[in-house]
Image (tube, rainbow, N blue to C red; front, side, top):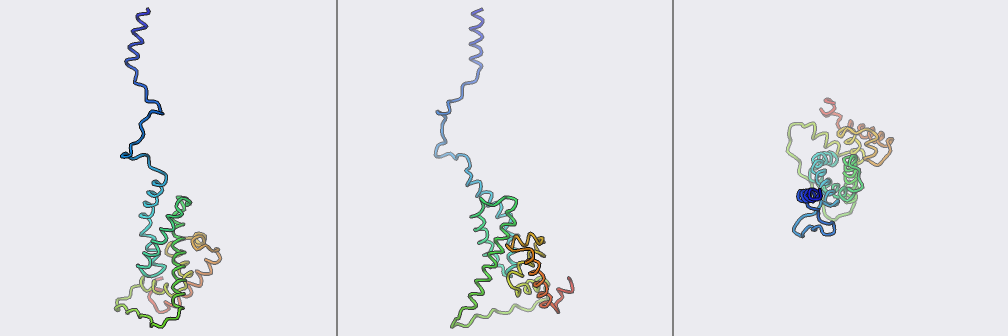
Amino acid sequence: MEGNRARGSRVLSEQAPPHPPHPARARPYPSSERGPVTTKEQQEAEFRSFAIAQRDSLRRYAYLLCGDWYEADDIVQKALTKMFAAWRRVEPGGAPAYVRKIVTNVYISHRRLAWVRRERVSSELPVQELDRPQEAVDVRLELVAALNLLPARQRATLVLRYWEQLSVDETANAMSCSTGTVKSQSAKGLRKLKELLHDSPVLARA
């Protein structure tokens, strides 16, 4: 009986898997191997994916605001830089609306700075822009040109409401203003657009 027990213990010990190393003796990652991804690296990767996915739509939105592709690129770049600084505080579901709000604020800041520059007294005459060659009437370009004549906040309100298809509440959030302000800015902007496009085919297609 004792002999059978001894043989059984020996068989079990031979078949059992080896004991894992003690945690204190576990081999650490060598300097040449990469450890687990850190939270910071994960956040940076998430932001890169977000920026790539949103850049084209933000660029189109910025262009409708400012009417110039070069300025639109500048606005988007500044907005994404600000967005990256705030990325850890932004809820994932609210990120698109948050970055659109930043784009709006950067655009309005650009308009204010441009106004200040125009008001500065200079001994040099301003350089006149060359007229573009006459082309067939392009409704979209004509409408963007008319939008460019509106005050910054009216233009941003119209773009958010009628191009981005945001609700009054969503537009108010993007503009950091009340819903009443959105409604009044929309009414004033539309009235001004109708005056600017009085003899234009744009209204005929509306």
